[in-house]
Amino acid sequence: MNRATEQLVYLVAAILFIVGLQRLQSPATARSGNAVSGLGMLIAVIATLLSAEILSPSVVLAGLVVGSGVGYWMARTVRMTSMPQMVALLNGFGGAASLLVGGAEFLKSELHAEQIPIDTGITIQLSLFIGAITFTGSLIAWAKLQEVMTGKPIVFPAQKLLSALLVLTVVGLSTYQLMTAESLLWPFYAVCAISLLLGILLVIPIGGADMPVVIALLNSYSGIAAAMTGFVIDNSVLIISGALVGSSGIILSQIMCKAMNRSLANVLFGAFGAAGPKGSAKSAAGLSVRSVTPEDAAIQLAYAQSVVVIPGYGMAVAQAQHAVREIQELIEKRGGEVKYAIHPVAGRMPGHMNVLLAEANVPYDKLREMDDINPEMERCDVAIVIGANDVVNPGARTDQSSPIFGMPIINADYAKSIIVLKRSMAAGFAGIENELFYNPKTSMLFGDAKQSLTKVISEIKQL
Image (cartoon, rainbow, N blue to C red; front, side):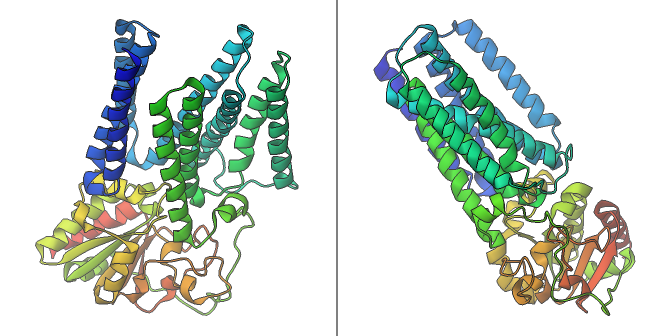
């Protein structure tokens, strides 16, 4: 394949990437967007391998078959509740690939005693640095989500100072590597090792509930590392795809931060939740909650004309999405209307609730974003909160001493009646009392969400 044909094929692949990314904006078109982007990547991979004559066509085909098989197996066997962990690992694989390619190019030049141009040298150092941080940072994110390690922030004295010194050390070693005419390998290995350590140090102080931001940011890192690697090996499609992933990840991170009313710096360095319950100016002393039985909840839902379901991470843990969809169908058969209110940071990755509900075959047009559903909450007969906590806490609007003050929430308290499914009265990630639980309109249905909803379904069927 000549250079002109190669660039034309890359242009087609880049267009497919952009179209696929655009279609990911809506749940209704996300699946086809993934397919379009995947086709673009397939074209780019085949063109690169054939153009560079790296491997024979038979080996290329074998690699595609094996890789596709592994990808298919992962997609089919990983449970939807474990999807955030899978995304974190895939981000890590992207960072590791950039680290390996950048390192291979550097070692190849050293082996042949070739002088690396300064611009290539800079991009090699960046691909090593960002790729290594993405790799180990993603592994820590996976470990927190998988509960292999604690999901709470891990902090120690002078942690930020140590991280800053390590960054300066990497900059110094990289500069020395670029400026020296000697053939030295120790700065290269030192940069790799310190960058791997930095990835760990930058993610361990971030709490589990901030994982939507972390995953989006690590996704951005993997894209930036890929773009740097594209400059290293002079591959335009890698530069384009990396830039697309990097920029979209940054934008998504900012959207997540806005939804929590916090800055990106606060998420990364604030160690939010590390100090345990922070309390609130409003105490629950003297207040009481009203519990409800599945029979009573069934009556409320069966005769409601407008129901809004507000899912949270608890729904994912209980794997209650299928039961939720069954209740939706029962309510609709009785003439009621059901909508789903999706908070941007509900769950452990961007779009987590959308993915779970899509798996349960909930129609896309029933999923409503927070800003769209809030104006309708006053007309809602019953708001049913399933495993959500801080994202429906009215204290975010009224309590200036609350750590979540100013965070946009779903206005569940505006509904005429509220049913909250929760295992216990334990506080959410912010460690504060949820005023919604003590609202006179609120009924608490305690227990595992899936089991509770199954009982409610049985009761509705008997009405």
